[in-house]
Length: 336
Ligand code: ACO
Image 1 (tube, rainbow, N blue to C red):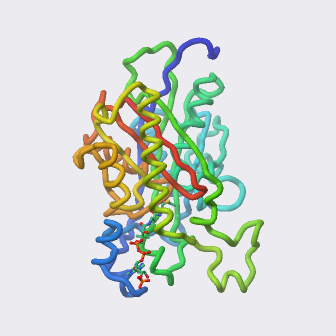
Image 2: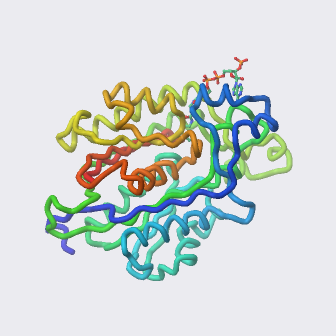
């Protein structure tokens, strides 16, 4: 498709998969010095899902992908691009996207992963959008999938209560010269990074900067380290900024938004953003209580739940907004 022909890039199907095992706050209080009241009041999280030992990130991503393909009416051989956003890949290489290809049989796809922490899925949508709009690819599968239970220090109450496992997926396609009537249309994208803040949220060990040794593994340097308060502050500021920029690009205001689907890290961060944007609670999608923070998976899982439950309907203006380690942030505005 030549790039000078107007085309519309659209999400045509969504899917998600959450592992069966539920880990409640009460169970966590038997592992570390915490309690349901503290976790609920500070984060809004009541429980999270934990993947089985033999369940890899690509297993969860593939199941979410199958459900998204079914909802889009797309066969595996039609997919020519697979992007997986994850910070918990199956292996350093091959990419998790390669394992997804193998599991769903999408043999015509080029496959790669994106590392942008919790903003990864929205970075993936924007990357896929460029491939589709340039005519380079026709049908993209974008997945956000995480097995964060493998990166958590289960002895650190500051972090282990926050995270969970899961996967969500979206199928994207461009429609040439299709005008305004295509559902799931992407209206605007924003993405940004501030790498002066890399130290606030990271997994310091286990890769090339600090290869695993018995000593640093003992010190749990291959697990998530986070400055919670600072992260909180920047998350609110950047998600607000990304939301406003996307609305401005599309010539809309917060009053036009029918549903905000924010990264699900913390109930208080979500309500702070919604309040400052002026979006009421009934227009803010929240499922952090059930799943905790699943990093790149939170937005595609929430988008799929909002789609299947009817919380978003055709024609609604939907704002997706995320923030994550890096720091990275991103937003995508959709007309559903
Ligand atoms: N149970 C009980 N007490 C706890 C727990 C716990 N699980 N965790 C910490 N505490 C204690 C601390 O030790 C501290 O005790 P002290 O005062 O005796 O030292 C006290 O609670 C307060 O700790 P703070 O860290 O100041 O608590 P805060 O109100 O900031 O809440 C939280 C912590 C929930 C982590 C908050 O800072 C937060 O949500 N930050 C943002 C985290 C986030 O969203 N991260 C991800 C974003 S990006 C991404 O998704 C990768």
